[in-house]
Amino acid sequence: MLSHLLAVASVWSVAAVSPGPNFLMTARIAVARSRGAGFAAVCGIGIATAIWGVCGLAGIKALFLAAPWAFAALKLAGAGYLIYSGMRLIVLAEKRGTADAALAVDGKKFSTGRAFWIGLATSLANPRSALSVASIFAVALPAQPSLTLGVASVALMVAISVGWYACVVWLFAAEVVSNGYRRLRRAIDRFAGGLLILFGAKLALERG
Image (cartoon, rainbow, N blue to C red; front, side):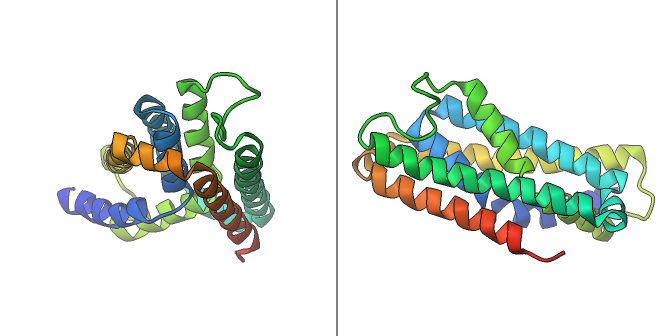
């Protein structure tokens, strides 16, 4: 069992630390809002990781292969969310510039609850995560893993994701980073929004 868990941990660690929408949104919330909001977003990512892990164990890859339209629909929905988030980030940065800009909700105070949902939605936006998890399990786990091994593997993935993004939040919420962000806020928000749009477009245009 230990060898299987080590295999899952090694592969998932590489996947978790790879830059992507989760990293971008977590860092953005931490630096622009607060460490607490950042940790709330991390909790959302942790829940999403658990969901994709369970889907991987349940054989969602086979479902997607049998019903490719379902995968395509989820992929387009996820791409649309990322593109919308990117455009909104850019528009709000231009509108409010030096004010408390992007990720604000119609002038209301940004809450940790909203940070949680942003983390969850961003992480769930890419259905390819389910395929990645299924592929990792296919390589690292036996053909019919026990319930204990399956649960331990998903828990390990969640721990790795939460641990990594908690470190990201801790770093980007540091005062020196936050002060630097405030000086360059508009440019950084436009750049971050552009990256989210690119991530969404890439997801929408990917084949299979």
